Image (cartoon, rainbow, N blue to C red; front, side, top):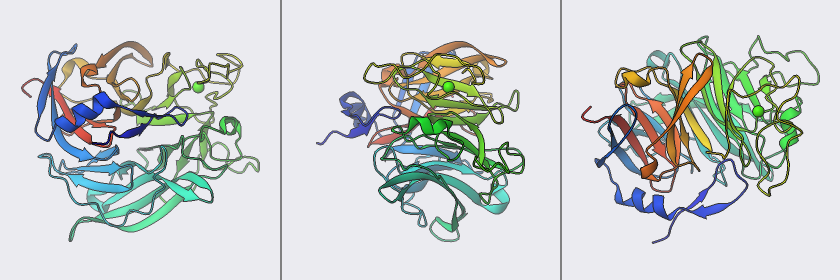
Length: 388
Ligand SMILES: [Ca+2]
């Protein structure tokens, strides 16, 4: 049997073989349940579905089924009982190379009325790739498929060779979209260049136009879609229900993964400031702080390679209400941050015994946490208190 080659997200193009997680992933099948200790008591981890290839994004439909993306370019619907649909027709061709492929998916806030969804992917362009955002309607009059597919945004700037697409989507209460865009790894300084979309957080309408309150609108030397800049490879994005603020998580280099609270026109510093070093061991940053550049509210040294982001507001884990969850790829854990307003007051690393790269975390309609494991035999996991 061939072991999977897995790209280390947030790192340079290093392929490694994850023998341990491969064994766990292939021996655990749908329906299997295991138990783990936590600060909220024993946790039950249930395999909802297995056999997904590098699943990346997860969105709950109104009837509790899940839309899930697989990085090679497939989108499927999974029932709470674990039945996995055939791939939905209508997904555009994606550039499934390196870290690229079909990435995040998010439902429109009026999905129940308009069946509209958004997704983000790596698109081939010339000799490389770029991040693109599409809008579509889910049509279930026959076998589920995407209809009215329209690419609403394409990242402009130097192309990616396969790394750092960012690609998380969060919809604001007014319906406009925030989307994270990576800096493609080999062109870090472009994150400081307002003339392109690399290393930026953009703010666009559902049609892909620059939102009307964007900070650089009308400036000839800046792209109108930009909301904030100086980002590296952000793979977590969500609104904090306690404050209404937009929070973001991004991969640092060797050390220096960050949690940031996003503000309009802010510069988050990459690669000028930060807390990491290059993979070679050499220095990257001028300093850890500089006037005019934002500090993260939390950083990790060594890196955990965070991906996915969910503020917990459910009833199933009363002790964890208000906590922030992120998956850890290199860190192979589910990470819980306890918050005190805009400060991180504690960290707990859960499910380490699984030995799995966690790509995505979402709160389900039942109050459980749902995870995607990142490998060629990826799973959807449901995490709940024992017996729930
Ligand atoms: Ca930063």
